[in-house]
Image 1 (cartoon, helix red, strand yellow):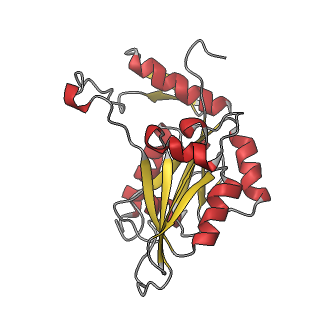
Image 2 (cartoon, helix red, strand yellow):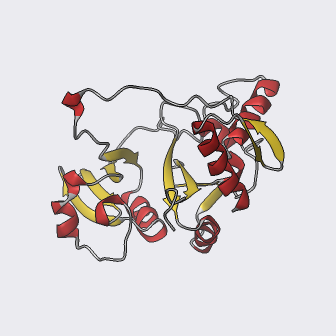
Amino acid sequence: MVAIKLLVSCLALAAQGVHSCALESRQTSADFLTIGDDGPADPETLGFAINHLSLIVRNLTASQHFYSKVLGMRHIFTAQLSPSYSVTYMGHAQGGRNGTGYQTGQEMLRDKNNAAGLLELQYLSDSQDEGMTATTVRPNTFSHIGLIVPDLEKAQARMEKFGAKITKRIGQSAENITSVENALGFGPSATTNQTERKLLVKGQQLVGFAQLLTVEDPDGNMIEVQQHVPPPGVA
C-alpha cells in the first residue's frame, strides 16, 4: 500500500515539474513520463464518452459468473438475437462505480447510455472458430481490462476465495510471467530478445506495475486491478 501511495505521489510530482522521487526504495527519475499538453477537445465532441467494452466469449455462463460473482457486475440484459447468438450487457451500478444503493436491472437498462465501464459479452454457442486466442496466449490488439478497487489486498483475497486465476500477485514482478508479458505486448512471440524483455519489465516497474494485481477471466483476458486513490483533499 505504501508503494502504491509513493507511485501516485511520484506521478503528482511529475505533473508539477518535479523530476525525481523515491519509488520502490530507490530514487527514480520521472523524466520517462510525458504529461499531456493537448488543447481543449473539439467542441463537436462535447459529451463523447467510452460506454462499453465488448468481448467474444466461449462460455457465457462461466463469463457471467466471473464478472458477476467475482467482480460484482450486474446483469443488465441478454438479447437472444438468434437461437445460437446472444448479446449480454453487464455493469457496475451507479453509472459504473459500485455504490451502496441498489439498482434493478430495469433501472440499469434505463441508464445504460448514460453509464461508463459497461461490458458486452457476445456469444455464439455453435461457433466453429478454434483459432480464437486470448491476448495472454498471444499478443493482439487487445491488452487488458483495468479495474479500480477500494482495497487492493482485500481484492486479492477475494480472488483467492473464488478461485480466480491470479497471474501476478501484489508486489510480484511481471518478469518471466509469460501470460502477463503477452498481454502487455512483449511476450516471447513479440520479441525473442531476452535483454529487451527484461528492460521492458523494468520499464513497467517505473509506473508501479509490481504493486498491481492481475487475474484472468474464463477466456484468458487479463484484468489489471489497481488501488483507488481519492483526489487530493478528499478522504
